[in-house]
Length: 156
Image (cartoon, rainbow, N blue to C red; front, side):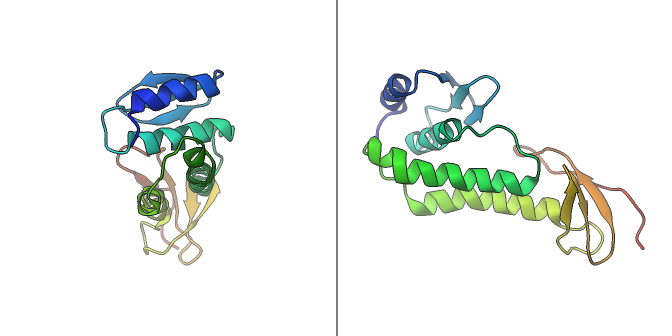
C-alpha cells in the first residue's frame, strides 16, 4: 500500500489540472476541480484513485439518484481497471463492492415508500412515487447524514 502522500505527489504530476486538498471526507468537487481526501485512513490510496476517477471521467452532478450509483460504479471500475494498474496498486474487489453497496442501500432506503414499503421511482429530482399505492414523497440530498422522507399526498 502506497502512502497517500506518495500517491498524491504522483497524481499531481500526472493530472496537473486538478487540485488536492486534505479534508475530513473524501470526495470530488467538479466546481472546484478539487479532490478532497483523508490521508490517515485505511486504504486511502484506493479511495484517492476512486475520487480522481470521478475527475478524469468528468463527473459533475446528477439529475436522478440512480445516476449517482452509476457514477460511483463507473469511478470504481476506472480506478480498478486503469489507475490501479498504472500506479501498481491492487484494489480489493470486496472493498469496491462494499462501497457500492452503501450507495445501493442509500438508494433503496430513499426509494422505499413510507406508506407501504415497496420501492417507488423517482419522477423528479428527489421526488418519488409508489406504483403500488400512489403515495408520493420527497427526500433530502443526504449522502453523509440521515435521509428524510416527507410524504406529499394522502394514501389513495
